[in-house]
Length: 245
Image (cartoon, rainbow, N blue to C red; front, side, top):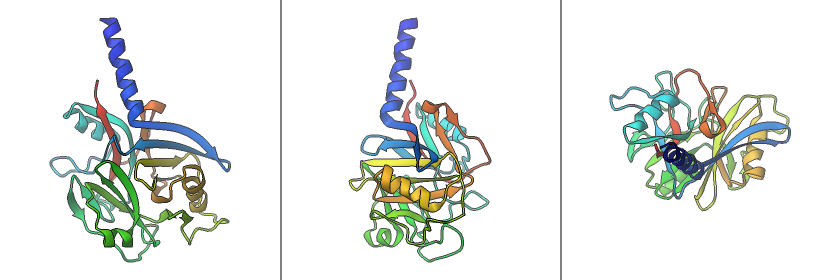
């Protein structure tokens, strides 16, 4: 009986490891935690509200919701800016249903620092797409969340990022490979500038397109690293679901 339980535990750990690979690293003197997901095989989704329309808000609530499917969270992160009622600031699609239209015009704050972009999940791939390109292509995203600014655009840093910027926050975001196979999520361990954060995706993670999710309120759930950040209720959350063994 003990041996069987041990085997089940190891299988669960192996399944989690196969779904997402999280690690800590240092780049240019700054600390980061990076979680890489194989978008071809992982059950990568966005989460916002429960069945009654109330915001899920917390990683623990998302995990509890997945238990009704016999699954659990292997990784999660806040995934886009939101209003006080936790509704998304920009475009949002969940399970094929558009809940908020695309916002393409410039505006206040980081979201409106154009170009911004959309993180799009389709069958077997994940892509960060600049907003105007997204509107033109009209990809059939099962899940999508809009945020801004873009960090990396076709291999180049956002044109407004300054190497000598003094604006520093804990920041998080996502980058994707050109073939859509890799989705790489990162959160800084100390306050960083947009320029510094962008170079992580461009130079270290090698993602030609990357999108900023948020700063200051950035949070990560990575049980493989014994990490489950706590805080006030969030809006959109991105996460990987695995079988609960």
